[in-house]
Image 1 (cartoon, rainbow, N blue to C red):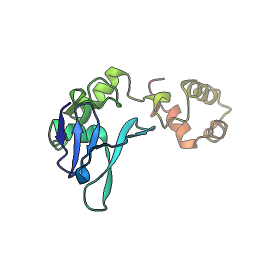
Image 2 (image 1 turned 90 degrees about the horizontal axis):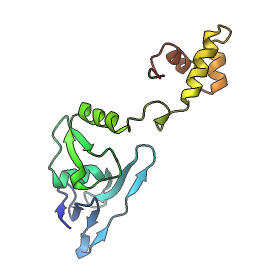
Image 3 (image 1 turned 45 degrees about the horizontal axis):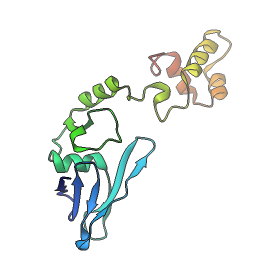
Length: 165
């Protein structure tokens, strides 16, 4: 298995299969990766200076080691759409627009209820619009019923958010 040094973290190496290795003090230890449930990216803590550990997304470290330093204005893309697949062959640099286009193509853009921060479902949005359309429910009453801010209801009604419904 190919390993390459992570230039910003002395004694840390990236493996082509997506593992991060510590060779500090002459040892060889695979670093534990932690999944952020909101953004679905694995991260690790590595020492970049004495007593200065820092958390990095694994895909960024793997890309840095196998592709090189990320050019300004670019970000790491997961070519297969799986944010947990940090194999070197699955990563490339691209613009934010390319990365967003990938997410749409793979169906991982997090639109609507698929967004990890969503409090509402598509059914809720349709019900909100229907209640408001009747004319007897104002923003505040609908907001209380669905436990969201009145500004959120206004944006839903005006199709500033949840446009795809």
